[in-house]
Image (cartoon, rainbow, N blue to C red; front, side, top):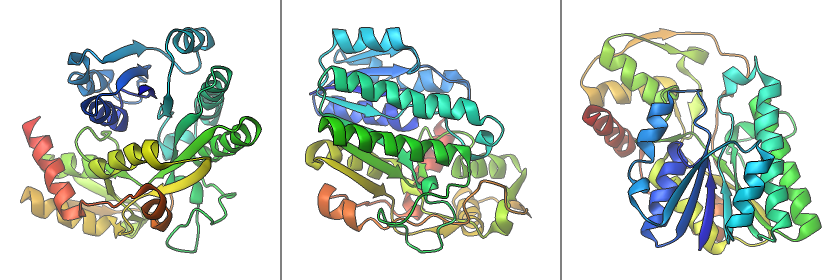
Length: 314
């Protein structure tokens, strides 16, 4: 297959490109090296893929209509995997317009180009944050998602609604994947496991918001990538899928697990909850198991060990 991956230099996108290249697909990668974190990290992420003759990387922005028109006209894609987004729940509180411009208008640009070029299979990355302060756990795809707690979450929900509209009007096969706190090698530096590992190693204080009681359904990168690959194979029509582990842990337990792995005591400071942050995420993955044959394999103890080993090598 000839596949476009937007956000292909990011954490998930770079792993996905390598996996699909190994399966002999032709990949076009698009990324704008957003300065949310050091662009040098993203350039390192794609170093392996760039060595493959079946990978072509295009620097660019999903808001650039002329560039997108050129890309879609030149390449005949069988599938588009849209991972590009403005990320971060807390930063979105101060820049909501930018998040909607990228996450909603950007997604609309991709959907429009896919429609006009008659591309039927589209996969869009959403987020567990759309569930808001859902009191029912675990989170099911059938649960209401009309009360997001941050502009980031609201922008992802708006993208999902747009996607359904395109499916209904143009009969496009569209899958929405709600990722639950993905971690592993190449994880963004601001994410908890990466941040905690760095602070413990440096002997600095770890701030545990929500008094250390906030829970996350941490999902290892290899499991997420297999979930995306299986979506290409098995998804039809329009569906939303949770990709998580169904095994949440709280922030305090995570810190204790990392200090054990690093063999170094963590300096912990418990803090009040942050505005916009979810008190917990917990994925019901029954649907993904049934339709996508998604079966996460990596326990948090193994995944964090692999991540720490990667950090030490760097």
